[in-house]
Length: 257
Image (cartoon, rainbow, N blue to C red):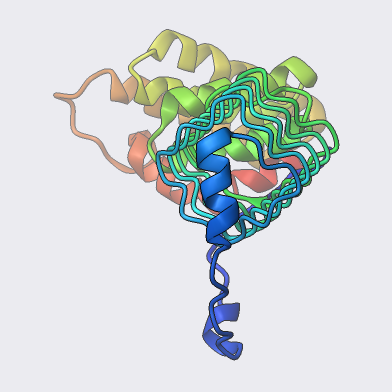
C-alpha cells in the first residue's frame, strides 16, 4: 500500500464556498455510547472526544468529520467505516479492525495502532506524525523514510529512528536512510552509531555514483566529530546545525536514484 503523507495544510477551504455544517445524528450517537453497538450508523460530525468505545461495533459506520480525539477504540470493529477527515488525534486503536475503512485526510497524529488491521485501508493524505505502533505492511521503505524525516523535523528523533529502521528492514541499501538516521542518532547523543551510519551512507552513495550524497556524508562525519566537542568553536562545514539547515530541502530527494 502506498501512503500519501500530508505535508502541508490545504488552502481549499480559503477559496471554496463555505457549506453549512451538518448536524450530528444525536440518536445514533447516544446509541453508540450506551451500547457500543452501532454498525452502519450515521455518526458524521459526532463529538466523541475521550469516549470509551472499547470493542465497539462500528462496522460500515459513517464517521466523516467526527471528533474521536483521544477516544479508546481498543479492539473496535471499524471495518468498512468512512472516517474521511475524522479527528483521531491521540486515539487508541490497538487491535482495532480497520480493514477496508476510508481514512482519507484523517488526523491520526499521536495515535496508537499496535496490532491494528489496516488491510485495504485508504490512508491517502493521513496525518501520521507521532503515531505509535505503525504496522510495517502498510507502506514502502520510501514511505517509512519520509515519515522518519517528518518526525525528525518535529524533533521526535526516537520516532524517526523507528521509521528509519522499518525502512531499512524492507530495503537495507538505502543510503539516504542511513544518512538521516545518522543525524537523528547524533541529536540523541549516540555519536558512535551516528558515525557508523554516516560512513555506511557514504559507501552506498559512492556505489550509486551519487556525488552529492558522498559530499554531504563526508560533511556529516566532520560535523559529528565537532558535535562531540562543545567547547570548540563551530564554523562552516563542521557545524551539524549548519549542515542540517543546508540539506533540509534535499534530504528527501536523496532517496531517489
